[in-house]
Length: 286
View 1 (cartoon, helix red, strand yellow):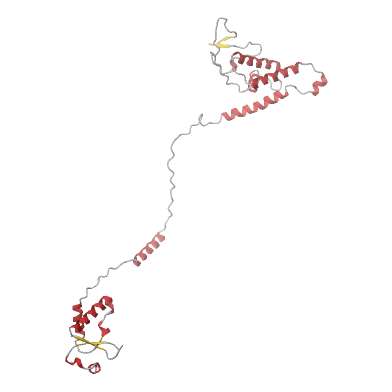
View 2: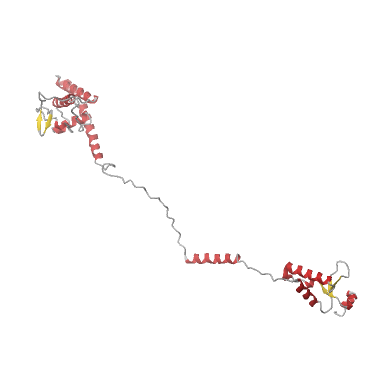
């Protein structure tokens, strides 16, 4: 038998406590020929969370004013509940027994005769119990309000989904047409600076240069040695011209003349008059 609430075992004042309720029929006493093993019953008492909760239940059930508690009747019903738990071999918490002792003490103090003077000065024996019940009632009401709030796992269920990889989206700045044109002009300027030109050198021939030198010396006069070289041809042109002059000297086609040390060198083609001094040979050309 399972009894989820003690309300099924407690009745109003004057009624006997029910032992069991089978298919709507109440049983107050065990049948004489019924054998129940010690561990055959399992009773769940989930309605009460402590002695104060049980007392508050008894008071509310009978619509009793919490400030005017009939201690004798409440004590009787409370002890009936305690005896019921003992009968079904439930382990009683110590706080239930402490409350039973407190109720018995209050009941005894209220039954003792007191004089009028003592009654005026002495506090109501129920004052401490009433204070504790009122405090517990406030906490119980707050607990019920909190329990009505949505709870994860009972009212709300959190989906277990793998969150996608968060990628920060980089906002690109807005570029105006004017800035784009300025940037394009800068690119073109840099391109002009790094533009490469492939220069193909003209092939110079020593034999051709020898002919050129003889052509320049055709008049028979002296020509300055440096006048045979062209700066635009670069080093290659200088070397080719120099080699051409050396070949002409080797073949005795030209001669070099220098009047004094460190004086300018002149070149002329060999002829019959090649034995004349430089000054005499240069006179007709003056």
